[in-house]
Amino acid sequence: MKWQEYDKWLAEQKEWIDKASYYELLKKWRFAPIGDRIFQGELGRYYSKVMFDKRDKCSDPVMVSKLVGWGDQQVVEDITMEAPTTPLPPATPELQETLDRIKKHFSK
Image 1 (cartoon, helix red, strand yellow):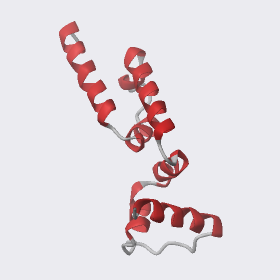
Image 2 (image 1 turned 180 degrees about the horizontal axis):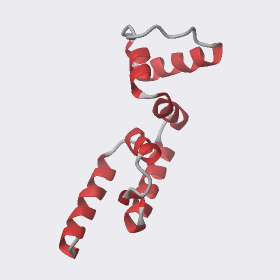
Image 3 (image 1 turned 45 degrees about the horizontal axis):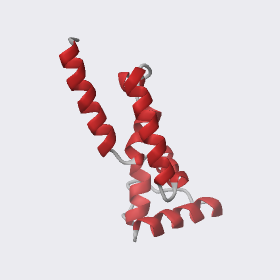
């Protein structure tokens, strides 16, 4: 990659990072392939700085982490109260409390 191309690519990646939500950054952080260039060198340091700054400004980073960890489909179905495509097992009291917090958070 030529320097001009690299500089353009770097600027595009930084723009995406700046526009991305904490959820999007954390999801990529967890599920990107090993060796993804966005986490290497100058860009990697920039990514982690921005992500952690957004985490610190997030009203509930633990909730965001759970949303990323549980996967989008089930959480979206739970939050929007749409019927899931497959029956879900009964929630434990702890999980139900967390789901109630998620629903309350997103119904604002």
